[in-house]
Amino acid sequence: MISRTRGFSLIEVVVAVAILGIASVAILRHFSQSLYMVGRASVPTRYGDSLKYYFTEAVRSYTENPEDEIQYENDEYEFVFDFGDPTFPEAKDYNLIPGIVLKEITAHVLLKPDRREIYKQVTYYVLPTAKN
Image (cartoon, rainbow, N blue to C red; front, side, top):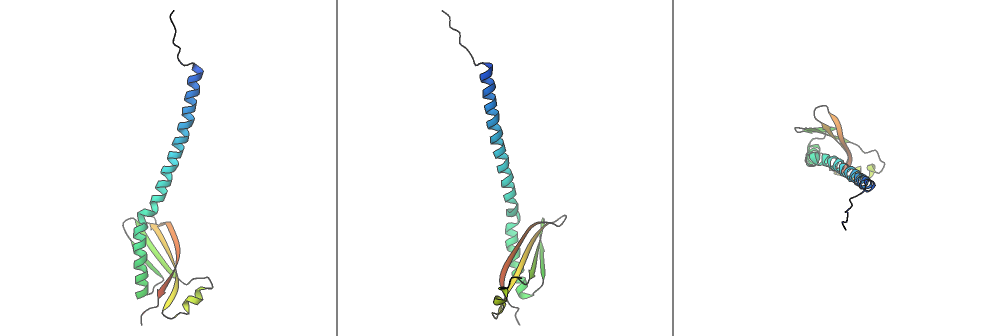
């Protein structure tokens, strides 16, 4: 007696391909979202170190020569720091202490070619008053 080995039926193949298709779409969707999030998260790291450096320089510059706005730039970005008085009521308590003043510093990161704002952060910072 000769036995016939049977292969997969057409229905079994179609079901297997459908399952693989659904699984691959789910995996690729997750992979593309991961790539999007990694790319989005890496944007601040491109200018993050420069922003920290220029923020420190702006604070140092402000303590020596108070100006309302201080700007720095590199090849790709422009960093603008606005120094203003805080608007919340408790800020007056800080300004009563001799030798210091509380300032609201708004940091803007602008993309160089078209000056489009890509980042903005408001920080409250205690600064020494100007030297006499």
